[in-house]
Image (cartoon, rainbow, N blue to C red; front, top):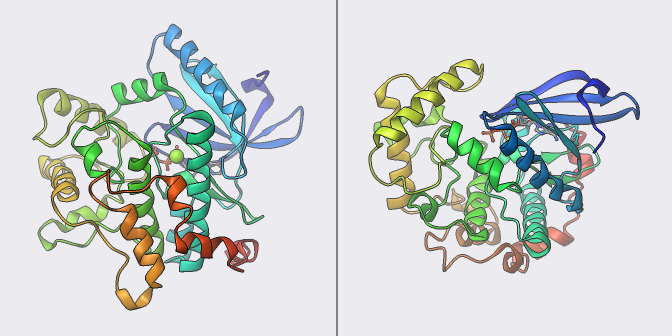
Length: 334
Ligand code: ATP
Ligand code: MG
């Protein structure tokens, strides 16, 4: 509430995403270390105030599986969101550093994400909308928590308007323009778990004719509301150009220059819609229950897919819950 920029001392850059950047900061009056996310949005002051109001719901989100919220404020022209700092960072960074993640750890990740999603939906009717390894964070106490969920409809709109973002974690029904449901988050979880277990984005190497997809790391396809099954409309192209400009300012990620790349993104989206879902393979490498769990996250028909709450009863999740895998010890290995 009383958070202000003057009280926050920058310590370290933690990373950049499509919507902005995240810094490790110290709140000097209290000595609290926080993560400060700066969201670039170009919206009217009235809209920014509305976003700020909507973000206040995060004060009521109290769960060990959800990143805590310290407050948000406007720092013209940006919105700053201050949250709990997770000293081991996000799971994408972790697997890129240490390689494929042990399946027993992946099981604990699945459990934590399902618990977080169930809490958000059952208690607050919030759908996450952006489950992926970079939004699953870890600390040296061995806790796993989710962040960047869609609390503010106005913020979702503002970002969608200014940036045709990401997400090849998007479910087939979302790509085809259907309503978002908790089951779309389940699909994204399935894709994320394969990525962690294999140490690479699952759609990366599966067709030889568009090997450039491997560069995408699942970060470049459009996530704007509405159907994307057709070729880009003039409006989408225009939005893509804006996105290109923004991408160029970023140091990470590939450039979107050249029409060929755009087609690859569309090909990837078409692939998700038309081809069988990826699996946790090779078969002998992973426990059968883990494989079965991932399969059930990745039913292409959302009606066949279970909700996070139902998936908490899956045998692999029940087993992960009682597993003796020590996450605190695991985090001390990197
Ligand atoms: P995108 O913008 O496509 O969603 P992203 O999730 O990587 O990608 P950001 O949400 O801006 O982008 O986060 C950038 C990076 O900052 C993340 O990859 C993560 O490693 C780091 N980060 C974010 N929040 C925290 C936090 N609370 N504690 C520690 N590190 C964090
Ligand atoms: Mg994020």
